[in-house]
Length: 377
Image 1 (cartoon, helix red, strand yellow):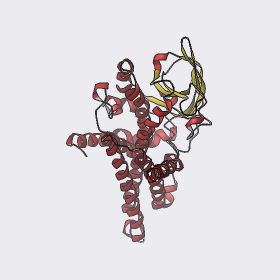
Image 2 (cartoon, helix red, strand yellow):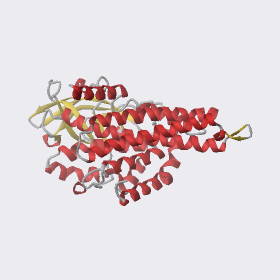
Image 3 (cartoon, helix red, strand yellow):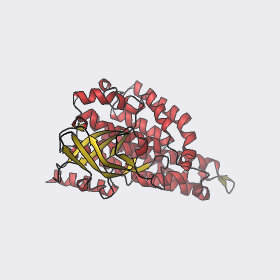
Image 4 (spheres, helix red, strand yellow):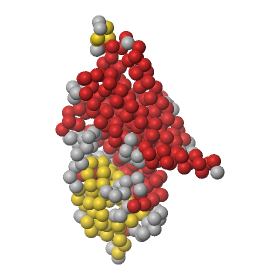
């Protein structure tokens, strides 16, 4: 922890997560109930804007500290942590690429704790292949007219604003532009919630744009700069998911270790058996490795050094670890792990999507390998 103040912040977040979030998680997930009041709570305590500059209304915290806060929240309720990470991702373009007038107009509300942002990049036929985006923003005398459909948008119907990426030309690399879209803009509607295997309290929908009119003042950066804006945000977003995955793995480890000390077989706790101790040890090693990897990448980011490859490594390592550790937790609990009497099965279902969103782990391997080979030339 870089400072005593940061350590106190993380301790406070742990208390909030334990007392306010964890007791509600299982019931809300079972009911697919989006916890909007939780985000108001986190906003009121300043946690929704931690890594942004204080001059913009943020908390002025290093990314290293923000990610540890995110991990604490994920340990209690991973859906909330992922949506918090998405909000940070959605606000980052305004903070980094907005004009002084745009920042003054929009950032205080975006970072003030009462708003929740959504990231509108993926489409039904354009996931990892950003160049395949088909949503169009056509320029006219009054601004832009947007038509298209975005897919897999976290908390779409509950968002107060969207970071939208739309095609303004057919150029593969310079054809995208970024826009700030306010919820309630005429022509914006939503598909039915996706029926997901996990993270059901985080509503995921399509967002549909039909003749949506946007003034030029809502474009972020230059026309054609959208690809650069999207990729710059995704590196940081991948660290957010790595922290969330680490928190989920920690929750599964905590559950498995506690169960092993209480469950008795052959006259003694199953924690006494070496075979199970080795499983727990491997789970702990995976969680600690994930944590160390995302913190290492975050420190590079905080130092202003390149961290794109390290962000992909962190996302890959942490999400694969979460999948392994949650699966092992189900095994430790045995038959009870396969029931909904314990959250182990929910953790396992939630871990799977970590390997898919923010760039699949196969994409992360491509990013890592290409970076290594460029350096080798």
